[in-house]
Image (cartoon, rainbow, N blue to C red; front, side):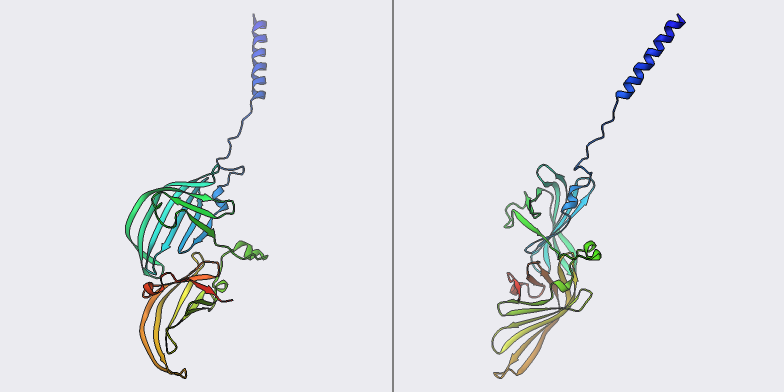
Amino acid sequence: MKKALSILLALCLCFALFAACGKTDTPAEPANNEDGQNPVMNIIGTYQNDRCTMTVEAIGTNGAKISAYWGDTARDGFQWELTGTFDDTTNRINYADAKKTSVTYTDVDQFTENEVLFDNGKGYIQVNDDYTLTWNDEQDADMAFEPFEFVPVEVEDDTTADAAEDKTRSLADFAGEYQSGRCGISIIDNGNNEATIEVHWGSSATESTDWRMSGTFDPDTMRINYTGAVKTNSVFAEDGTQTEANEEYNDGYGRIQFFGDGTLAWQDEKEADQLQGMTFELLK
């Protein structure tokens, strides 16, 4: 009987060993891609379309945080905040929590929320093959910019190690002379992203209006925010001699928005009506 029990126990032990040898643990598949990295990391950054700026951030394993701002005037605009999930089958960021708020700027890059227009907006951000983004939103489907394609803010290549880490543009990339009709804008780089802006508008052969202001360039939004703008109206004689110079105000504020394609928009709180629809082009 003891011998039989010993043989039986030995057989059980052998079966257990064979079962253990045959067992393998299959690792779980990554949630997004082969190395487990959030695929949104491939598109993080700043994007531009006309007067709207969009920033994309990666969160978690396949999430995205997106904010956008549309400037109607120098003071007023709309702000969107939303989070979504990246679908690697469709290359889309799907979202259902978009919050749209009308805002008014009270100071340089400081704004107050006026009214929450909705906080349950649905839609998606389509990542195109050329790494532009197309924004499709159900709540804003009737707006003129739907669907709204965003172009990434490009930076110039640099072979240095430091530049490879820091791809942010500086004011030096946008300094120069810009023109729209009879109005010219000079962007002067004072170093450290500090700018002087001089504007000359020739009303006629004997009259002109000039603005002068200083501001700071924000590389994330490609925008110069300024305060203390001085506006002067001048009258000239036929020989070009200035006969009058009247200061109209000295407390103007607003922004110079660069689009990265050699154009800019001047958005001034006091001159919003006069400047509406104007785009300035860099003189070659």
